[in-house]
Length: 368
Image (tube, rainbow, N blue to C red; front, side, top):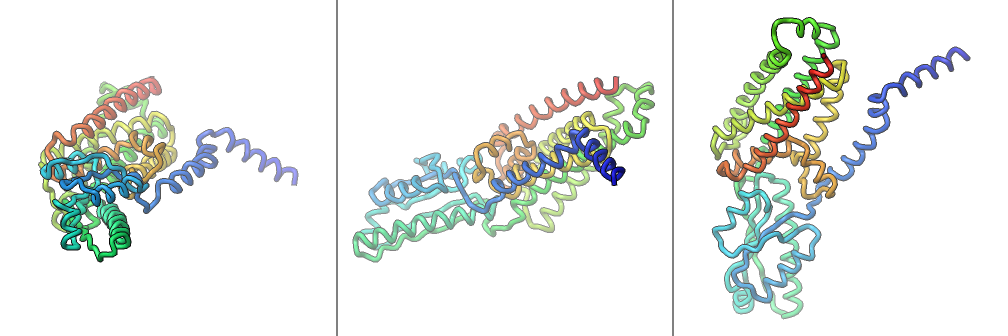
């Protein structure tokens, strides 16, 4: 019995000596429950919308006040020209535009009918359907108030229009997200494992003693995964167009160029992971925990970022896949010009440069 207890004590000491094991056993469950508890939600909160109200009468103002009082919506912009409606969607800051008809109050009082158009960004069909449902419920509530106040059977017709995705296909949302997830995992995980394998087997020193410079050795290991990622990118685009029916409405050149940038970023991230761990198992675990979960939860792939708490929205800004997926949705589905994705491209370039500098510096330090 004494030997058995000593063995148990030894195992506990062995676990407590390994900080990575302690992190996985004790800290990771806390992080997961927080992320899953707050990020996974079907509710829509704090969604930025725009209003186009040519009438500006008492009834439209009452409806607008209802939108302002709702916790679901934030009125971010009031549009004065109808041709501005498409522009606000291209910027990516607005998810829904509420368009009132002209002479709204007069039509309602004289004919008993008036129209409201709800224009949503259909690139995220689930979110768009929820948004229009909430907005329709607010309009229906205002309609009921008017009926009770005026004792007249008013009818406010809410017409729903889905931009970019009129059929409300889920593939329009998931194809860009899957592209980001596959490219990130293949490049980052496999690159880190390939380099750590050499270190674990003790062959990295032999490679470094060859006439090739260390940078060329790293590039030689990264090139195959870059090529495989290009093949995966081509396959995904072909399947999305010819099988899933998701069109490439934007410029294919810019779409491919941004994807190449993201692939290179993921390779740099894999190199960074390889400098932080010494075993293939640790590299796989670090890649899976540090990349897979943020890509799924914090990139906008499944759950809208606007509905998350502010702290998670801030954390999501350091997830590269968030900016890649946002840019691909704009280029591939919305068909916008490159000027509308300059913000995302700038962030991806800055992240790539930072990861490359840190990774190469750490790699040289660890193997010098």
